[in-house]
Amino acid sequence: MTHTCVGIVGAGPAGLVLAHLLKEQGVESVVLERQTRSYVEKRVRAGLLEHGTVALLEQHGLAERLRARGQVHRGVELRFAGRRHRIPYGELYGGRHMVVYAQQDLVADLIRLWVERGGEIQFAAEDVSLHGFDRERPEIRYTRAGREQRLTCDFVAGCDGYHGVSRGSIPTGALRVYDHRLPFAWVGVLAQVAPSTEEIIYAHHPRGFAGHMLRSQTVSRFYLQTEPDDPIESWPDARIWEELQGRLAVDDGWRLREGPVLEKNVTDMRSFVVEPMQFGRLFLAGDAAHIVPPTGAKGLNLAVADARVLAEALLGRVRASDSRGLDAYSATCLRRVWRVQEFSSWMSWLIHRIPDATPDAELRRRMQRAQLEYLCASPAAGASFAENYVGLENL
Ligand code: FAS
Image (tube, rainbow, N blue to C red):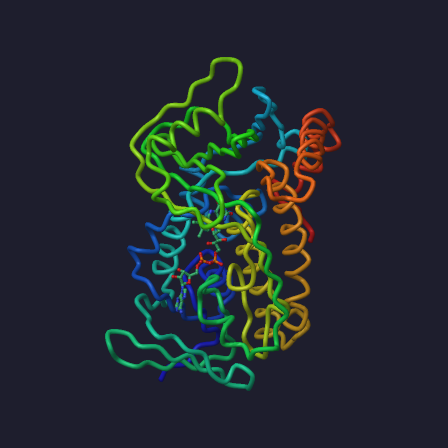
């Protein structure tokens, strides 16, 4: 049996950033990851980092490769009624910018730096179970290469995502669960094709939303609105490109480049939050505690924000025996979580086609169009969008 100060379950953005911030201040942790290293370093997910996320990574010496290979972005393009509307969020929000950098590349950077700095990470840790976190000596049990292992710790960080074991380890009834499924889903597409745009495009179209996201100069990410539970089999590549061409079209002849589809899947959209994000000596961070609709590109950024709050709170307790940060952990994180939930939900309803089954669908479509026009015409509305999209500070 080994002991560490903080047992971290999950080597995603939340777990890895937390591990680094603790180690930098001399607080030891062990990261337990169910998957193999190569699996987590190839898993395609997010790709847009908020200004605050990049600043935090830079502050802690974790952003060298991100700065060298990420693409700085200062604006986004909305399309509707065949027209383009650029929202210059950099100008509207004090020059702050965002960086396009694939999540799997960030995870690979954080793992490489963690190992280089002497951090301990156990990949392929199976059957993880959490014990005693409501008492003084939490224990994490797991098997690795068929042998049972036990890790005692002073605190446990549940950073194991929505499908992890941590949230489910908390006694039923101890959590309030908020779970809302939006009436749209995304066909996520990764294609071997250079981007046809300099900036991210969100297109509102009568056939449904389409998004042209960016990942690199040779690979592009696209999203298409579909029905929840729509099987990916109903989206052959030909249909994907036909719908992207149609929904992204504008009246100035712009054309979308096409290329081989590398990956495609259907992702449901939900707003999910558990309160509180802690129980005894177990603290949930990232997707283990909340899921936001991917529209506003917030999930990864929220995970890193939780990790920053949890690291500060744990350091306060471990180094100064000051428990106030840990006592307030959940309330501190939830202020940002609910702000981001509201913005992501608002943005989802702004740019998706309102389903026919929605009560007063036609009326809501008229109000949606008025909102789009107002957002593109009003500097005040643009500034409010900019600070939410790029990332609110001091929350
Ligand atoms: P993660 O899920 O990233 O990491 C959890 C880790 O815990 C994983 O490595 C997992 O293998 C491990 N784990 C799980 N169970 C375990 C167990 N029992 N024992 C040990 N380890 C365990 N967000 C955006 O901001 N923009 C996007 O465009 C975007 N697109 C997305 C597309 C998809 C298909 C998905 C699924 C998510 C997307 N997200 C996006 C959200 C996503 O990026 C998450 O918000 C982000 O990964 C959250 O980071 P973590 O909380 O660290 O959780």
